[in-house]
Image 1 (cartoon, rainbow, N blue to C red):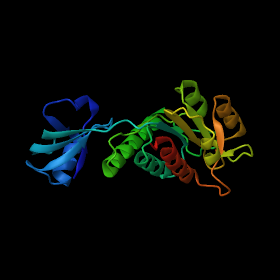
Image 2: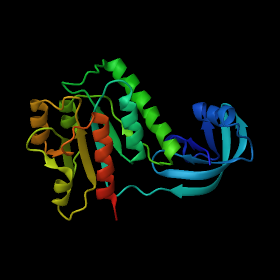
Image 3: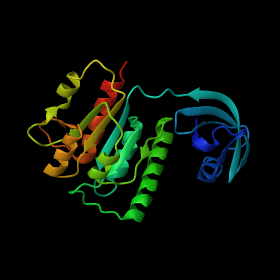
Amino acid sequence: MPRFFIPPSSWNEDPLRLTGAEAHHCVDVMRMKAGDQATVFNGQGGAAEIEIISARRDNVECRLLRLIETPPPPCQITLAQAIPKGKNMELVIEKATELGASALVPLLTDRTIVRLDAGDAERKREKWQRVALEAAKQCGQNRVPQIALPQTPKAFFEAASAFDLMLIGSLEPDARPLKTLLGQRSENRVAHALILIGPEGDFTPAEMAQAKAHGCRPITFGPIILRTETAAIYCLSILSHELRSS
């Protein structure tokens, strides 16, 4: 069944409406018309089955058939990802959305090749948020991760919320296997987890020291050095399985 997005601010309207790009996609791309059914979601866990009442390219009115509430995950996982070259950040965001990441923070580390001024940073954030939304529409995810403005690790730690578990991918000798570290955690449920993934060439010693000072524990993914985007997907997959399993 086709899926469309309705912003949270418009979620309680009666009737529900698709506007802007979502209405265009519904009418001009999907060729849907009155009487057709679809699924709509608000990116915060709310979803509904609807029937189209009227379909115009700038406004699609919908009749609510059934509400669907997606419970929040037992553990919210934030990915702080050093921005890779090319379009690989879009790949990371797409896969992070599919794997249920709650938030994603693009990092501008000392060894990050990509450099952004304030205007570029906001445009990138908006583009990456659209990537996350499109990924959620495609995979059936009713929660869309919030993409933060690109920022330095220092700025991130200065404003970071509290996490129950903080990890950082590392190539340094003191890094512990992820499996070992997860096996040593206490029986207390992890409600908020953070994983930092560095750029090509890893975090600098100063950045690693800063992360450790804020409670991050260095982890290794094994003897093979993974590309930064591969490391993010690998780690999110394991954390989702280990921290969200009943």
